[in-house]
Structure formats: C-alpha cells, structure tokens
Amino acid sequence: MAMIAIRGRTEDRTPDPGGFIPPDRWAVYKPNMYLLGELSEHLPGMRLRVEGTAIRGLVQQDDAFFAARIRTEPVAELFLATRPTDGFELRIAWGKRIETIATGDRDFDKQFTVDTNDVTLARTWLDAAARAALIASTYGFTTEDLSTSDLMGIDPSSPHYEPLPVQRRTWTYDLSQDELAVIKGSIEHQAERFATAITTAAIVAARSRRWAAGYAKLAPKLDAHASTELELGGTPILSATRHAVDVTVQLLRKVGKHERLRTKISAARIGIAGDSMVLTEHELTKAVCPPLPRVTKRASELAGYRLASSTRDVSRLDAIARNLVLTARPGAVVMSAHDVVAWFDGALEDVARLDAAIELVARWAVDGVVAGGPYR
Image 1: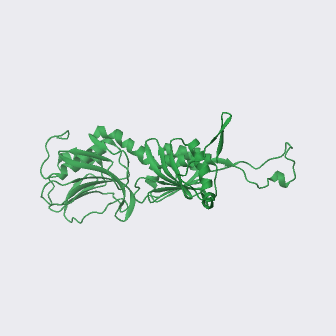
Image 2 (image 1 turned 180 degrees about the vertical axis):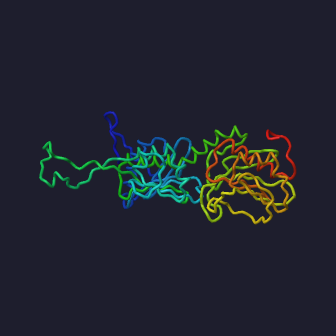
Image 3 (image 1 turned 90 degrees about the vertical axis):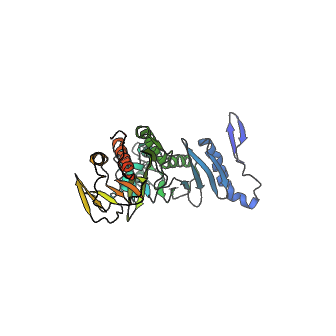
C-alpha cells in the first residue's frame, strides 16, 4: 500500500485497480499503481487509471481533453492523441544542432532542435505558450562521473574543488500521425517529472485549440461561425453565408504532390453553366501551386494575375471581382463545374483578405450577376 503522511497521520493512497489482482500480476501493476497515486497529487482532476502495464485516461488542458497512454517500462513514454494534423510531423529535442528550424525565439532556439516536414506550420504550431512550456519543462541532473578535481585528488572540502556542473535536459516531443509521443529514453519513476511531461505535452497538443480561438475572434468581423477545434485537413475552421451561398474556410496540407500548409476557401456552385476558369498569380511556384485543371484559352490579364477560361467569357472578372482579387491576393482561384476554390499559401488570418476571398468565392459560385452586399 502507498502510505502518505498528511498532518501527522497516514492515509492509504494506493489507487483501487478496479478488482482483485492476482499475486503473480501485482509485480506488473505495482510501479504504475504507485505512480498513479502520486500523479493524482500533482495533476488533480486528471482522469487516469491503471490498465495492465500502462496508465490510460484523459488529460485536460484548459477546456481541451486528450486521450493519454503512459508507460514506465522498459522506458518512460507518454502518448497523447491529437486533433487531425494532415500528415504534419514535428520533433522537438533537447540540445542545439547546426541544422534546425529557427522559431525566432532566441531562448528557445538556443536550447532545442526542431525537425519537421512543414517549416511554416512548425513555426505556427510552436507559439509562445508551447515554447514557454517546453523551456519550463527542463530539469537538472548530475552524473556519477568524476570531475577534474576528483581526478586531480583535490579534497571536496577544499575551496579549490570544482564539482561537475549540473546538466539540464528534457524529454523528446514527437508529433506524427495525429499522436504526440513524449519519450525520455530511460526509466523514470519520479512523479513530478512525469507530471511536467504530461502538462507540457498537453500544452503543445492544445495548439489546435488556441489556434481555433484566434479564428473565433475573427469570425464576428466576417459574419461567420468558427469551429472550437482546428483540424488540419478536416472540419472547416470558418463557415459563412454570402448571397445565399455557403462558404467554408479550411486549413490543410495534403494537396497534390507537395505537402505544405495552405488555406482553402470554397463553395459549391449554384447554377448549370458548367464552364471552368482558373485565375493564378504570375509568381505562383510549383511547390505552392495546387492541382489546376487544364484550361487552354487565356482570357484576360490582371495586375500580377493571369485568367484562363473554357469559354473566353471574362464577365465574372468585373470591376468588383478585380477589386476583391487585389484585396484577397490568392495564389489561385479555380472555378470548376462543381465548385469555386480560392487557394492561399500558409494560414490566412488577415480579416480584410479573408473577407474579400469569401465574397469573391460566393460571387463566382452563382451563375449570373450578384446584386447587393457591401461590394455593390
């Protein structure tokens, strides 16, 4: 039993495993049972339980919950299920290497190495809250190696004795396949360090929640509805209705051959015209460019853009549409027989550009001239 002294008395704080444990299995349960008892002291409110050789349950960060799995042997590991990340990979390790991703935070960049398959998204994901939590998660430790003073035979009581300096380190955080793995690489039974790792992991994983909160602040200015969670490649983060057309704003990575963070603003077409049109930036590179349909007839030019239409009809690119394009500055706008999609490189969070893009997509989704609205 785990006996804990509280105000001069002792209490049994050994968690109930939920039933009888055979003696031959107690050796497997025992380390996790003691760890869970201590974690409950450091992380009140966490919904954790022992299941065989692991601790499972829900970890809370603000108003976000994450399914967690904790193992103490053969090495200390923690796994948190995250919101969909659309193939995004991010690895944060202690120690500075020459080849790493700079976040712009000097204190963080001096201490950590960041590897990723999407540099833009990695810098966005590692916001101030995530970086601060990672820096605060470091802890000091000493080794049993001999110092130079020990090798020279200097007595530890001598004022000339110099002990080994205290080293610092933290766990490795690896985000991949919608899961955040936190690994130490060795055994760890100190509940305080486990609690710090759990809290830090939850803060890093909750970036999707904080990101969604940022879009929620923009939603009223766009007369839109915001999702409470940001899912890359999943549920749209914003949805709005313009001219009776439902328009969605989605963040995603996997589009075509190149995987990188993009913003997709789209709406289903209303009408039976069936024509197609492609508007692209002159400077649009292959890495940024989404898959574009083949439209061979060049119809018009706009400052910094080229327009191609299947019918050479340029009536959609009227004065209002031109102003919207120049305000939104999309990488490309693709109108197919079924929908209209505006593409942006990275995460679009500028209110004016978002508003213009939503309006443009809604106007082009309707066959015929759209009357009314602030852009009339």
